[in-house]
Amino acid sequence: MGITEILILIISFIVLLGIGVPIAWSIGLSSLFTLVVSIDTIPAFTTLAQRMATGLDSFTLLAIPFFILAGQLINSGGLAHRLIELAKNLMGSLPGGLAHVNIVAAMLFGAIAGSAVAAASAIGTILGPKMEEEGYTKEYGAAVNITSSTTGLLIPPSNILIIYSLASGGVSIAALFLAGYLPGILTGLLLMSVAWYWAKKKDFPVGERTSFKKLFKSFIDAIPSLFLLIIVIGGIIAGIFTATEASAIAVVYTLILGFIYRELHIKELPDLFLQSVNTTAIVMLLIATSIGMSWVMSYEDIPVTVTDTLLSLSDNKIILLLMINFILLFVGVFMDMTPAVLIFTPIFLPIVTELGIDPTHFGIIMILNLSLGLCTPPVGSVLFVGVGVANTTIVKVIKPLLPLFCAMIVALLLVTYFPEISLWLPRLFGF
Image 1: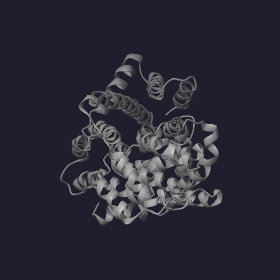
Image 2 (image 1 turned 90 degrees about the horizontal axis):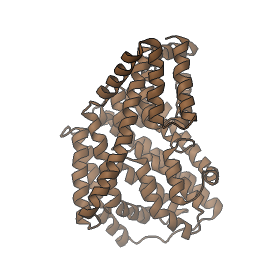
Image 3 (image 1 turned 30 degrees about the vertical axis):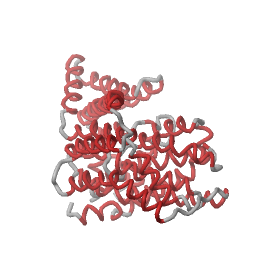
Image 4 (image 1 turned 60 degrees about the vertical axis):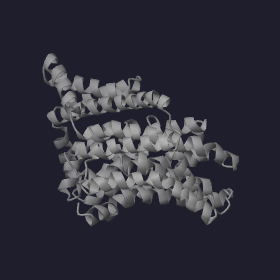
């Protein structure tokens, strides 16, 4: 690839983002500008359009709109409230109890809905006012909510793990789902350790110890919600159905539960469907343009160039993984997670594969790394949702956010350099 094409791709993308063009359009237009330099204009338009269309022609991608709809139903159908109540009865009596409740609830919610934005919105709306009532600042509550919500991207089912499977050329979704459990739980535990230390230092209130009877009741109430995990993940691992079929089952199951709980009404369904369609349209446009850019970069031999460059700098696995993590951290600050995974997986996967790193392990590293970008400006979607729900500002949230952000960095380093954290469960189940 000539230096001209590289500069056109990078500069046009940065300029388009800088003038406020939405990221999906920035990706698509910068890809088009780059391709026009190499081939004639009309073939460039038709080729890029064709690659975008064929990129979406995937049975696996059907899981995404279904899981998005399932997340909407979970949020509106009473499942989220029951999960939060269970988390409160489990963790409320610890120092900084409601912060722990927020983290555990996010992990449980993520394990069912698989959406960081949905978790930040649902849990922040419910727990934010309660944390303020008990003396927590709204900024601290927002910081806990923002960082803990990202655990749902690792704990399955997770849309972004499905997208990584697509971008990697077919890494097992079941293996990725299993690989996400321990890193997601580890991240949650490290966030809880920061919350515990902060509670001791600031002398935050401690809730009353929950009686066994109340804890047992909340667990019984949450069982139908938690049973969704067994159906979805158990079915995929056992080979009973695919991830796409599991996502459709999740929609039917959450819909039935919502009506049983009498918190979901037929007249609400059109709005829920419309919200899901809007979200799906945004995600699919991002996927289409990202697939287009990925193809353009392959056509221009960018992955080969990057691979040769990095391997020429060092052949040490530790150093190269550190370099890749730094690059992804930088990318995550300026790019949404979905396009980042689709664009950079084909670039970095050949490098790590050559180093003998398992593609499943690398997928978890990549998702955990890019999760950090969701908590940072200027494009951190979870940051904006968390701040909006808490009715505060990004500037005020940064200070309490930093220690929690550091805990996520520690989790990333542990997952990067201790592969068994990711690979133990998949190997246990034969993946």
